[in-house]
Image (cartoon, rainbow, N blue to C red; front, side, top):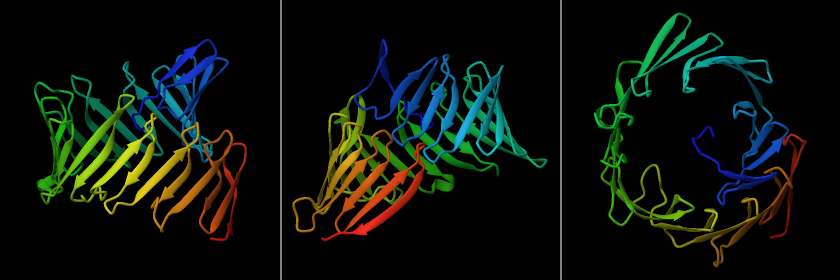
Length: 308
């Protein structure tokens, strides 16, 4: 996926089975495959595994055409871009609407330079890999002004240990503890400890202890999950518990905030039978109803007050 996430399915005859934590759907039609993500984006692939169509949940469509090493992408508004790629399918050039981008790689096939040209003006961004025995680790970026604006460091297990911007701004450190937890220290010296649980091979945060950090205000919070890795309970630093329930598709059907207290509040959701889109959301004092067309585009939204 675009975010780097991998989705795994097992195929036996005509049956396609998703891994326990996969919430998308994969279906086969003739010689093509269609993957529908949890957010209702859909991706079509040809028999060789090449992406041929991407349709967003909002209905925006992109068609991909392959001619040798050149790929042309056309959207449903008629806009196009084209890019070339090498034998490893890494992009070499990209062109669209007067903008040209050129990608250069080092001997280890890692991006080393990105050059943008528009209207006769050229600017470059450099990528650094400065650990001799770890040539695949990105250690810094120099921006178009020639300023080294980001630097990362790593330990001997290739785990990031620090990050900072130019001049040490927003410096942060990560310490990996023997018990599997991690301590994050921000630029002001504030510490938070993150504890984890592993579900189906993926780590999820089970507790955050310590002072709230700017990028993560949930200090002294705990979390539990079901077998699919979906959040079941969240307890905040004031002791309030939020509980979650899901349907077989992994979609939230009920959320109860401040569970077990006088402030308790429950929100329930009824979902479309095939699309990952809500039909009805019921919360204290209000019911909201949605309708959609066959492509999942919203047609209407209405709200009605209810008795508390």
